[in-house]
Image 1 (cartoon, rainbow, N blue to C red):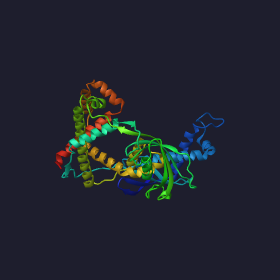
Image 2: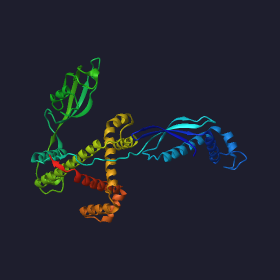
Image 3: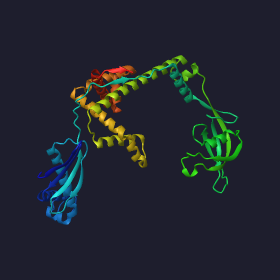
Length: 414
C-alpha cells in the first residue's frame, strides 16, 4: 500500500505514527467499498451485487465513503505495523483523523508494543527467609477460632454484656422532639454496629424492658451534621442471646472433622499452620527476588495489559460501576507488579529453556492422582474440563525459573 509513515513518539512501550494515504489510493478504496456495499443493498433494475460501483457511490455517497475510510485505515495500520516491525501489545487506536473528499487521508496511530527485556543482572541479590514458628499458643488461638465458628447462641434472662447478641426496638427522637415507632435491629454488642451511647443504653436494660434517655452522638460520626448532637433515644430489649462455646473435647474434634481425639485435631492444625507458614515464607522470598530483579533491570509495561488485569479483578470481585474508578486506582500498582513479574518469569523461562513441557504436566497430574488415589486419566480429564492444565503448566514453569534463580542467589534464614 502506498502510504507515508512518520514516527512522532517513541517512549518506553508507547509508539505514535503519523500516517498519510494519498488521495488516489483512497479513491481506489472507494471503488472497492462501492463493490462491497453493492452486495448489501438493493438497487432497482440490478441483481444484488451487480450494480455499477459508480451508481452505488452516487446513490449512497456517505455510506460508501465511510466504508472506504474504514478499509483504508485497517489496511494502512497493518502496513505501518509490518513496515515498522512493531510487536503489538494491544489493539492500536486511531487519533486526529482527517478524511476530506479528494484529499489525502491522514491519522495518527497510537499503540503499545511488547517490551523487550534484556535482564542483564540476575544474580548478587540479598534474600532473607523468615518463617513463622508455629507455637503452642498459636495453635490454641486457632483452635479457639474454630470453637467460635461452632458456637451457638443461647437465650439468657439477664442484662446483656459485650459480646451478646440482642434484638432491640430502637427509636430516635425527630427534630421536633417526638419519638416515632421503634425499628427492630439485631446487634452484637461491642462489635461497632451501634454507637457507644446506644450500646450503653441497651446494656442498662433487662430483657422485655424499656429504657429512655438522651444519647450524645460521637464527634467522629460519619454524618458530620450529627456529630456531637444529643438526642432522646428509647430502647426496648426483646431478647438477649449469649454465645455458648462447645467443650474442648474429643466430641468437638469429631464434629470438626475426621479426628478421633482433640490431640489429633491439634496435630492437624499445627501441620496446616506449618504448611501455611512455609508457603508464605516461600512467596515472600520470591517476591523479594522479583522486586530486586525489577529494580536492577527497569522496563516499562504496557498499560493495556495492566488494565486488562484490573478489569479481571473487577469482574472477579463484582465491583459496581460507580466504584470501578476508585477500585482501578487502588489496584493499579498491584496489577502492574503482577504484569512485571510475569514478564520477568516468561523472559527467563524462554531464554534458559525452562518452560514446562506436556510431559512435565502429565507427570504432575500423575502425582495429584496418586495423592487422591484416583485414576490419572480421570484426573487429567477433570483438570482439562476445569481449564486448570494451563495453571499447572504455569506453576511448573515458575518452579523451574525460581529454582534456577535461587542457584544464583542463595537464601539466608533470618
